[in-house]
Length: 348
Image 1 (tube, rainbow, N blue to C red):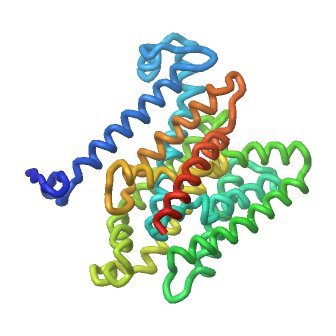
Image 2 (cartoon, rainbow, N blue to C red):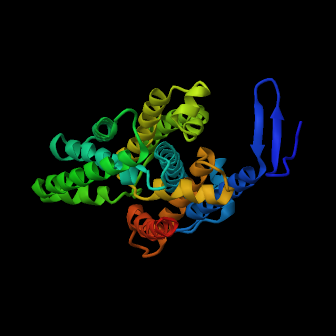
């Protein structure tokens, strides 16, 4: 059954399992973002030092491509392309969670410091304990969680407030960044160089062995986050209104904090701290959908498109030299951040 609302086109979906309004503009935007992300993925799979035709790319998925093309597409390029899409979606969701919690477009894990905390945990493992993949992943998760706990406790006063979270997070991020630099300066030259390159945020050389565990974690956490998205949107109305509608404000906020940090840490564990995707994706998606608040599915698709496009640019701009994708996202994100700050200044 469908119904059109003349204020904003919607479709009423009603069946035994699901009932609710679906915004048509959001559906169209999500479809276009998905098509754009897949188009970038196909280009990334087909182009490089050895070009593969689109037909051979499609044949590779059925195992029918010529031997070399099959290996290039499925073993060399596909892990990186899928990782860029999945990691971008994870960062988009994480940024959406924190911007919704803080009710501020600057409230992302990049700004609040959770990326930096995850990087600190991973660095400690890499430089002091040998740096196995499992160890780095665990260090990133623990570092991100400890940073989140510190920011939450220091910002808590009769309930956590968005602006306090951002200010406290910026301060902790600055201290952790200084500590990270000290760790690198104290390390052996080879280990320091490897840590510094990884710290720029890179998908170079990623394999199925690295991507698969991260994909499982990200998928599970993303599903859990989307399951509480309705409560997140009710919190945007204010704690009193949310409580009146049956949402326990602080427990829900703490759950969202844990889920958002877990998404960021899972990406950081594999690719390093990739900056600005989490900051830009939710706001760009919100402007395209013209929604009243943050919606996570468009944010995820925008994040997937941004990171996949940035990684393609990182591979091709100065080929055969491959840049860390974080270099490209920092350039794009820096322009976006200047525009955002200027826009907020004009508003005030």
